[in-house]
Every structure is written in C-alpha cells, then in structure tokens.
Image (cartoon, rainbow, N blue to C red; front, side, top):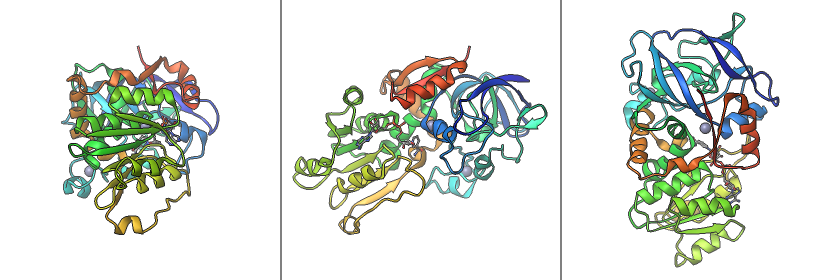
Length: 368
Ligand SMILES: NC(=O)c1ccc[n+]([C@@H]2O[C@H](COP(=O)([O-])OP(=O)(O)OC[C@H]3O[C@@H](n4cnc5c(N)ncnc54)[C@H](O)[C@@H]3O)[C@@H](O)[C@H]2O)c1
Ligand SMILES: [Zn+2]
Ligand SMILES: [Zn+2]
C-alpha cells in the first residue's frame, strides 16, 4: 500500500512529507493505522544528526497510537480493530531479560531495531523499490506502519488516541520511574528535577504513590505551574543552591527519592547529592549528550544512597502501559493536559520548532 510519511532524508534538514510504500505484515508483525503520534526529543535528536546511532533516510516517529488493521501469520496478542500504542521499548515475554522479571529491557528484537529493521532484518518501508529504514521499531510519523507484535500494547478503546500516544514514551517514563523503577513509599519526600513530559510524569507518579512532599525543580515558572497542577506540593526555580535547599528543608538529611528528568549531567549530580543519607534513591531518566559522564563522590554511595536509571521508567511495556492508561481513564492522571498542540502530518517540522522553543509540553500529530 502507499502511505504518506515524514522522511528524514538527510541529517539537519527538515523532514519531507512524501508518499512511500508499506508492505503487508509478515509473520509476527502487525499493520497499524495511526491516529495520533507525539513529537519527542528523541525524534529531533536523531534528525539533528547529533545522535551517534542515528541513520538516514528513515521514517521517524515513535509515540504512536492507532488501530490494528491486519496481522501477520502467528500473531496472537492483537486482532484487527484493537486500539494500540506503539512501543520503542518492546516486551517479548520470552527472552532471558523478560523472563527474569527484573528488567524491562527486552533483548528479542533489539539488535535489528537499532539498525532500523524489523526483527527478520528487513524493512517493510520502501521507495522506488529501495528499502527505507524504520525508526525505533515504530516509524509512526506516517499514516500507517508495520511493527513487531512485541512493539504494541493493546489498550482500552475508551482512551482518546491523541492522549494515549503520550503513554508511548515520555509520560510512561516519568510515571514508571516513580511507580515501578524507584517506587515512592507513602509519606516520602520526593524531588523531581525537570518539569517536561518526563518530570511531570514523575510528579504525577509520586502523587499516585502517596508521597508526603513533592518538590519539583525547573527553570521555567510556566512549567512549575503545570507541576503544581499534577501534584507538586513545592516548586522551586533550579540553581546552584538547590542541593543545599533540599538539605535545609529535610533537617540536613536529603530527600527519600530524587528523579532527574533534564538530561543534564550537572543536574544528575544534584539529584545524587540531594538524595537522603542512609536510604535515599536517585533515579536518572534523562539522556545525556554523547561522551558526557556523571561525577559522583563515592562517599555518597558508602553512606547509603542508591543511584539507578531506567529506560522507559522501567515500565514493562505490553503489561503495564495498558494499566497506566486505565489509571488515566479512572481520572487519576490528567494526561489530556499534556497535549499542547494538535498538528497535521504536514506540520511535523512546525512541531520540532515548537519543541525547540519549549512551547508546550507535547505537540501531537493527528491523522484523519
Ligand atoms: N529514559 C527514557 O526512556 C526517556 C524517555 C523519554 C525522554 N527521556 C529523556 O528525559 C529527559 C526529559 O525529557 P522531556 O521530554 O521531559 O524534556 P523537556 O526538555 O521537555 O524537559 C526538561 C526540563 O528540564 C528543565 N531544566 C533545564 N535545566 C534545568 C536545571 N538546571 N534544573 C532544573 N530543571 C532544568 C527545562 O526547563 C525543562 O522543563 C530528556 O533528556 C529526554 O531525552 C528519556
Ligand atoms: Zn519519545
Ligand atoms: Zn524480551
């Protein structure tokens, strides 16, 4: 079939919205008709050419939500008509990592996904007979896509798909960090660094875990306003004195949990140092720049702090994304508030501009 898709032709150039070919799903694959797709930093990072693992040409996009149209041989987890969210963080349920139950990092399709192919090492996307690579196993800046069934979470049909798309990446990352990877205990003092999609998700997750105090730190007063809406009890403008302030307000001990959601190694260091002596946990979710390292004075570790990180907030995607969306449907998470702009596929580059200017939390492409 022919579809319209946003192609990254060359790094550091605007995406081109054009017609490409999409082949039918093979065994274990599913064709999804996209209804919505969020525009994420990772798409922009790859488009910029700065990401060392990036490749072009390819069809970008990974925060997709849509409806299953056809399934390949042997697919059992979804049927045509099901509503789904695409997963850059797949879950096969059968690899050594999935079976361990200890991690959400599935190994089944990772290698080919990183190369831009479906699990059998080929692409379903093409142009003039030449294969065109997929992106993060998703390629959802497109009217339709073919993905592995491991890359789809089946969700409630009650969820509006433009909002459901946010659970494909940033929102689940923040929620998962506070609920699954480093689960906040009741009454805990929490500090969240960064109030973008990921940090706000962590704020909401901490609230759902019944934290006692949720301090959110950002540089933008507008974003801190959103943090209050999602459950922050205290909001601070960040600076060099943030760690001292956390210590002052916790009798010199530090916070039970700190979550870093900025991608800045200097802020990661603050998050480590603001964690409580004895049992504080620092969870890093931001993606740092190439070659950057995080400085930790070992004394912070020997005195009982745990430093950890998570991809996709530790969320076991096919099992837990549907549960997070159920919490949204139950009214526990105001996820609609994160959708700041609704764009058409033709406006995808405008979505990058909006992100560049930190205008809104998430721009979402809607497909008619
Ligand atoms: N681990 C994962 O799987 C995963 C998934 C999605 C995003 N991410 C990463 O998470 C990070 C956050 O993503 P996002 O979409 O929320 O980004 P964002 O850019 O929307 O938000 C980052 C926030 O950090 C704030 N900030 C900047 N400097 C600060 C400082 N010194 N102190 C406090 N706050 C500061 C900014 O004002 C902004 O509000 C990025 O690095 C992104 O790449 C990771
Ligand atoms: Zn993303
Ligand atoms: Zn697996």
